[in-house]
View 1 (cartoon, helix red, strand yellow):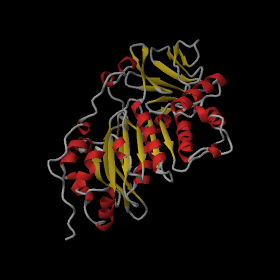
View 2 (cartoon, helix red, strand yellow; view 1 turned 180 degrees about the horizontal axis):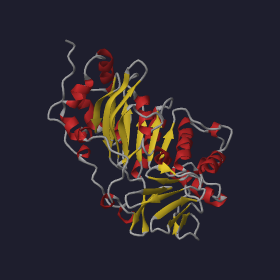
View 3 (spheres, rainbow, N blue to C red; view 1 turned 90 degrees about the horizontal axis):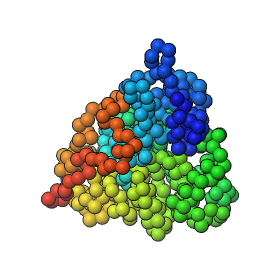
View 4 (tube, rainbow, N blue to C red; view 1 turned 30 degrees about the horizontal axis):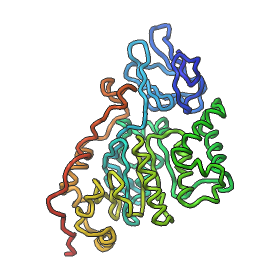
Length: 399
């Protein structure tokens, strides 16, 4: 049985990340089953690990085969398909990063993000925000801890799962003399298989332009766009491959308050459309638009995680300027200890902290979600619900 994007395959996967003739599944003479890569552009994966080009592997009922955004499990003598539509949970567990000399610049960071969420990460300089972003995306894994993508270990299955992650850096990586359309065309040619037709690529570009409201700017040179519009183009480059997780590093840096709001509303829309979006930001003006807020303390520890509307009450201050001043004035204060001793911690993070690191193995078949069930609502765990404490916490003592 052949698997691929072309209609002549026995199993057709309508995904531009998949080659026209991507892989082949068949029984061996001794009654076992084998998956073979057919020289695909983006690879065929077994349990998150890539097969060699045109290579093969024997598979059993506990193995997971990855092709594009789809995964397959052997059920009897056939493959059963599960599709990653973006509605996935995401969690970090006990992430710690240690640099030369033994200094920890990220300390035991744990939090869980339900599907279709917008999460903001804020904190003063030196709080480990950039280090955390690299650890969460797998581009600079933490020395200790795990990142779980829908119960799959990102670090152990990075080769496959990285294709489902979009990362928008702080500095726009755009050729400013190109038009918006040409920039997206070049990106599409690099990211999609060589057997993708121009019509297929153009159809996806048109979809992304419309989703990000860039269609009216499609023929303009990038250099002529505003800062907010250029950031939309950077996001568009990542959306071409339909990532389930999108990370952004300071997307509103250098933008005026109006453009700041515009970009944050864009991210809100991406989350509402079924993606999980995490944004590292210095701006606190639009935090209320987010589902969850992660506040990092000096030294790289978590000071708060929960609904943004409860955060100031948690710290016992009236403004974020006061909170950041407290971080500066009480740099040696045990912000992480205060967080772990709070009711908010019990409501929004304790269950994540209590779970041991996960292995590379996928959950058993009954926990997998087939395509027909993807539209259902999933529980996101105790960290999604709860009420604020009856009284605000006190300021740290200077004594």
